Image 1: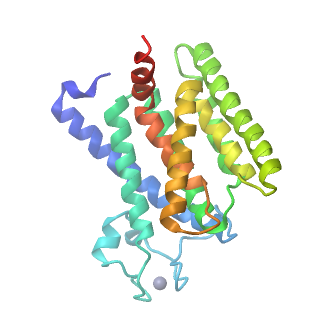
Image 2 (image 1 turned 180 degrees about the vertical axis):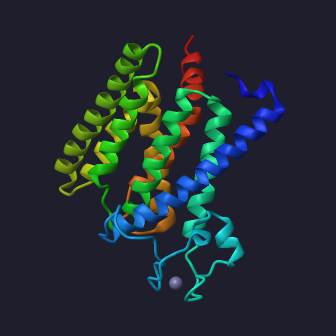
Length: 259
Ligand SMILES: [Zn+2]
């Protein structure tokens, strides 16, 4: 369905997308924090990361509770990291962009779910330098879950497996070769699994574009942060989202150069 035909409907869908994005962002913040700090994801109520006070319903309203309380905890009055509200806003924007690009479609469902996984694993990777397998597994399950509802699931599956295997196995071989040459570990195992999982969604051509973009963004992160050891999960995740939104256009433009 083309949502640009009706302005009212378009605005309505964007507002709903923004609310969903912010709510999922809030949930991801909580989940990623718990995983990074070895707390149970399901048990226990949400609490202030600084004073441990349990949060009430009003504290859990994304973006607005932060603005209303001027970025401080209601109970201990300490400053809350702007990271939390930033994640909520970014997720709202990602959901709007996806709805704008793909309308009400399975593609939108696929990418919004993938975006949640990517944001969560990026937050955990930033704190712990590891990408937990549960995010990779969740990403694979979400891919196959939505695949069941597509019209031409065989063609989708073929493209997805070609993307996942070519990019995932390609990166695995490249990193083994690179490690042998340089004598140290270049890419973590989590990064390679992440390339496989996201390759399912992107297919082989956009997957290849994603690979190149991940390297460029990764190098950009290294140059900007100036650290020796940087987590690659966030760089790959950013590249995957850009690839999912505009990768097809870039690939078509590039292939068009040779016709
Ligand atoms: Zn507090």
